[in-house]
Image 1 (tube, rainbow, N blue to C red):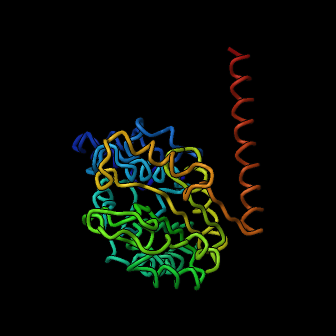
Image 2 (image 1 turned 135 degrees about the vertical axis):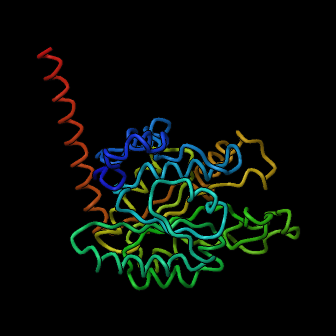
Length: 304
């Protein structure tokens, strides 16, 4: 990784906006083991957003941004929804697709990037809500998995249409009553993680955004495995506290409740044998880097 994509010309430094100068100075681009701990110190990790106060999607978006292994060479593809309000604030190339066709856009984009930059790693990451992923866009979601497109699909699961008033979605849980679904859901929540497995995804995870270290690990695995093997899928519970009638600080407790043992968002992770082997290899490499850093620090302290 490097800062080349955001580095500014020294000749223009005196007229560049302070905001951009700060972005370059604090960016995590070029940091090998960047993580969610950089949030709050690095301007590229969504300093501000226009979502509701306490929105779990804002947490999820920040954790995803901090977990991208190759941010300067990543393109994110979004769709209509609350996330549309965040994409203009992020320091990563992104495309806004039509509602539901995000995986089709991502498929073509990934193929074009491989032709245009055959010697560079270019990651393509889809981020959309449950309406775009499992309802309106399900056909294009599944077809990208069937074709083994090397992209990562992330679904922000609100369990209803949080952006347009609380209509029922395929991921709404059974018997749940929303403002615009007064009769309640009549069938079970669509098991999209299992469908993803059956459709050929090499890595599938379902979780909430309450535990940043877990989200970071899952996102990094999903993106890196998509490069090597094929499609990966992550489903993140991001409850709409506004539509649920909760206070701004209630989102974390709602997610923790949903991830308890036996609940619908108890942590789930699927890995093919090939994916498991790669994850073990990368984990060993990360541990080696950590040990090398510790050793270097001790040697520096001894010399001082």
